[in-house]
Amino acid sequence: MSISKKNIFKQIQEIKTQAEQQTDQIKNQSDLERFKFEFLTRKSRVNQIMRSLKDLKSQDRKAAGQAANQLKNFLQKKYKQLGKQISFDKNLHIDITAPGCYYQMGHLHLTTQAIREIMKIFEKIGFYRVRYPEVEWDWYAFGALNFPEEHPARDEWETFFIDEQSVHPKLGKRILTPHTSSGQVREMQSGRLPIRMMNISKCPRRQLDVSHLLIHHQFEGLVVDKGINLKHLKGVINYFVKQYFGQARDFRIRPYDFLFTEPSFEVDVSCAACNKRGCKLCKQGWLEIGGCGMVHPKVLKNGGIDPSQYTGFAFGWGVERNKIMQEGINIKDIRLLYQNDLNFLEQF
Ligand code: DAH
Image (tube, rainbow, N blue to C red; front, side, top):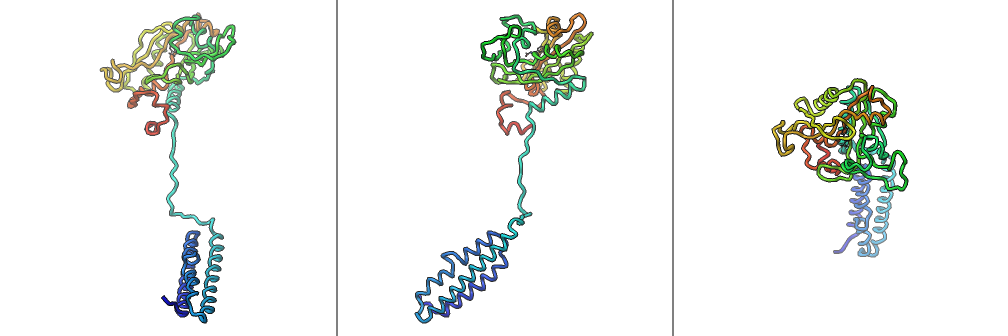
């Protein structure tokens, strides 16, 4: 196709008009990029004109070339100017219509929620929270609690021992305390009397299956005062069961044989799903929540308390176990609590 000087001048005029019309609409960086793409890249119309100059008659080439160059300069200048304008207020550009960011909100873990809930209940009747070592001496976890050396009952606690040569002459080996009962004698030794202790901590044990965690939490109550008897223990259990599990739940105590309490019991709470009738969840209508009893006189002595003056009761229950026995929480595998599965955790 032959190309004429007249046609080139016409095109130049058109491009200039178009560019001028567009400058009013350039507000931000992406508008500017669009301008550059349209008027200044290799495929732009100006460059097409440049390339077609060689097809003009030689006498027309000079004038058309000059006009095309002028246009190119004009466009480059415009582009620079616009760039300065928008970079001036670039940082002020806020798109208030853009949708906001959504930050996912977390919440306390179920176990932390349970610990707070438990503590709130016991605080109301005068218990105070304590914390004792989780890396503990054998003596506090067993010896002081009336477990003779090598007694087979120790095996039930599936204890982790610290691997070290030295053994303390009185306190024995160091262990990861498998139960919060190790806090009992420590609390007695603090000299605080009367005692209304609530010791909550982690308890590692060599056990892991659907109903056992390698590390679970226990809460241990200990009351020592003059004239404390079994009725007080039953009263406290009743109070806790109603507060934590609901008024409709009942409890019972069954004789058991812990070495550090005499008499000793296990406590059961009626099943929320079947109300004592017996179902898949509970088998016979009751769910076990943990042990309790009247503090053994030898234990009081080990804590420096005179058993002829003072008596006490104690109970030690699993935080996670009690949590999953609350109404409406049907967890078949206790390990689910610690698998960081958001689908599960977000339900609470
Ligand atoms: N420490 C026991 C356990 O881990 C539970 C326990 C039983 C605690 C009887 C007590 C108690 O204070 O009196 O299985």
